[in-house]
Image 1: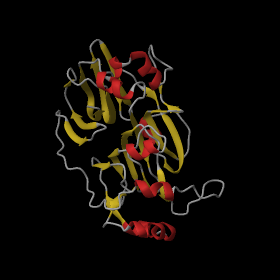
Image 2: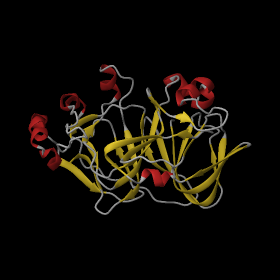
Image 3: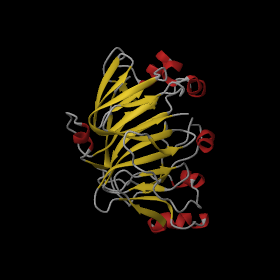
Image 4: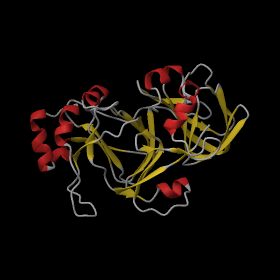
Length: 320
């Protein structure tokens, strides 16, 4: 099992919650993202400690192959680690944006598109997201909506609360609003088409680049009516909150030993600690994990035991 050094990113909209949440001894302002596990070329996370310390996640996959990834995953993805996990802290609104699907991304010379999900960890009063349109939008109105800023008026806004889960499939126009602190699980892709950015200016006084034309073909103009994924919180029982072609995600709440049987899964598993502390045991290996830490469990693991030090909440995600 492995932990990775997070990649912290200062952003124009970033906040101040990630560093204390993760208990990092770091000084950095406006941290909007912590990339927990990433195989994005040029932004690959590195193993923090142990025999594989210093290896990137890609080098780790190259070293262990199917034993880490699972036979089916390794056949499909090779040495490309297929999931990207982040913490996101929005002091201000993120841009209105959209991601392409696999087919469009590949036509444009990229490996994968970008479907993602959000788990809301914390939400300030009035925190909301934009997800899809309130009603279908005529593509002929797209240019005028963007140029005038009225694109905001046609988005579907949702007030969010901790524990809620939202899907953002490729093609859905969306924006994370101010006050949201969340876990994002997505395909390994950094393809984002920025549609509207509130005319904000960076430290050099320049407005950020927009990708209006690139976004046009990616947008699903009929995508409406988005709500939080319904699920019931349960203690010491895994609850599935997302099931996509790219990943399955469960929420694990535990206050006593919890055994997770992976013997027939044939996939790696990612565990994201969003609350509490626990000892994770796999065979003869035990790793302590606390709030804000992320752990990669290889496909060769037949199962793990989660022993809470304090009542804990874990986001468990994998490919099947």
